[in-house]
Length: 205
Image (cartoon, rainbow, N blue to C red):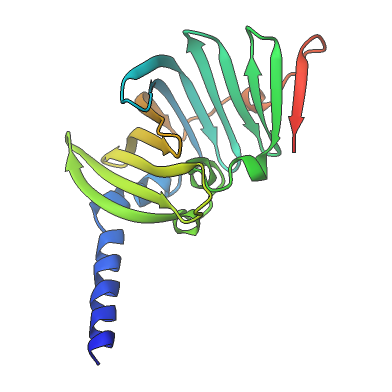
């Protein structure tokens, strides 16, 4: 009897945490989402929590399955998902790396942002509460072999304002989004990889 009561209390606590304001904001953000466009600033922190660098660019998303991280400073680089493959395009090196998309995105935030995969499939959801006038969620990977330790998401209303990725090597990548445009037309050609004959291509399946 006591074990059943304890289990019931834990279950109720889990449901309450999963259905809090942060989770509600995530659900509203994903509900009806077809395209997203936003400027971003990415800060990379090393293991001693010092800023190793900042990058700036444009993020484009079209569901299902398409996205583009267009880094414009300090170096030009593109991460492009075309629905089948993920292409990492490094202009300065004239080098391209191709990953099979279904494996590259598995267990990452991109899976539920771009691929419409249920969040609970790959992550345990933990409510953090309000900080800096934003509603925060923590996502903990279910896969013990994941490269990520946790993901933090922060919302203002139904807009994703911040995202933080903490990896198993102690590195932290923080994204801040601005000038967000939701469900506006995006040129489909922006999600098509344009090959260059004189560049090196590394294929990783």
